[in-house]
Amino acid sequence: MPGTWLQTIGVEVEHRRITAGLNYYVPASPYHRLGIHVGPPVNASCRCDGRQHRRVQAHGDIDIVPAGLDGDWEDDADCTILRLWINPGLVRQAARDLEIDPDRLVVEPQFQRRDPKIEHIAWALASGFSPDGPSDRLYSESLARALAVQLVQGASIRQVPSGQTLSSGQKRRLQDFIEANLDQDLSLDELAQVAAISVSHLKALFRRSFGMPAHQYVIHRRVERARQLLDQGKIPLSQIALEAGFAHQSHMARSMKRVLGITPAALARLRR
Figure (cartoon, rainbow, N blue to C red):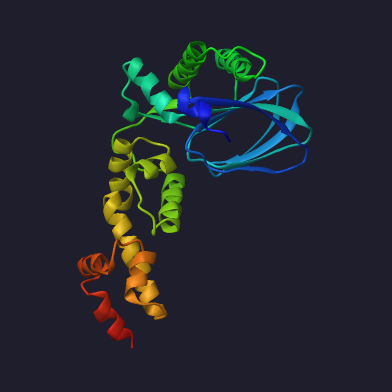
């Protein structure tokens, strides 16, 4: 997916032709996604956020998939989807403009939403994105902001109650992402995108859900990865440190001593 328009106005639009009977897997994205059905009705099935949805998809039906969620879609006839990607930062700014705390809001998945305002804005944006249509940036930016306002004001946004924890899906996605990227320089921004919430919201919910802050959880998982590699006894400590995500061997030693109460060298000697 090209990123030029996402960088300039926060929204990208495309027409996607869907072939009957093919299962389309759409990976998780850092952007909120809207899919508007175009044309005659089709029997449709989708799996998203651990739930299966079967329905007759009619012209104008809108699926809203928050950032961080993947899914599978399948239709029994050829159809066209008007698809939009929306930068969560645009939605957060729209919340601020409406004097709503963006940290108290979360976009939820919706299916077959009927919203003439969203549909009208989407088609206006699609016209602006067409090579044969107008390309006035101010006009496109105003449409993008209007679309973000509709998401904030619509039922796809709910207020977050105090004491809330991460959903099971959010926890699973965070655990999978962290395990797959332990050797990378993880950031709170990345984790917040995976969970599709703000950084400040992530920090509060992560501690409640995992019993420790995100950075401590990552250190514990890196220590566990290093311990597993030590048990295998196939590579030197310096390489284990890098593969487990530590900056260097002494960093691994300090972290392992703090978490397990023993240094990697001592642990390696016990394995002999």
